Image (cartoon, rainbow, N blue to C red; front, top):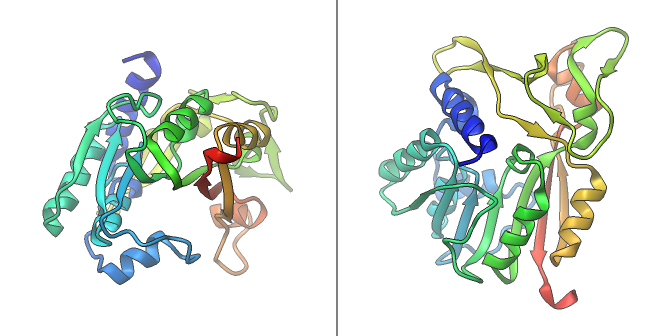
Length: 264
């Protein structure tokens, strides 16, 4: 385990213990609501008996939804606390799930063309080089398989969202590999289920520019089918709030892709 994985594992475990929303298992799902949460844009193929890899995507959320749709689910996750949440969801619903602790950059435990779909919601920014992951995903996906990838809008990494002064300040250059480590905005404000609020040091993150993402995905045969942006849904948000920031810049982007190695 290198320094990146050791630090991010410890920090994700701390976030889980603080009750961060990304670690709260979805325990109120039905097959209908599971599909709605996964697929608001109507792009998800039939999942029954499909092999799904939730990549660096623990917490008992997406894994539970895919399992309720009839998929065979594998979770590879760095944080053992996150994996415990996936196990909790599996026990709640009574399905089997394969849980693997490991680094998203190394999928060597899985054979070639093992999966029909790889789900990776916002974890690619926790490593400095996304192309290593794209290469591994291409290897384990079957031709025609789907890659659902969420990542940070690279322009969001240039801004500080917590201090409005007639605008949000640009604090970092737009540069591939620009990192957030111990800066003020590396802390996450966590609202736990019991109503307590904590400031917890978040995982290390790296900016991946548009050219790095697009060229890297194209290099390994991924075709973008649909793009979603995480936007504010609160009308007339108060200036300086998170909802106000969202109205100006979507911080998260999601790509639905198809793996087409034949086009390379």
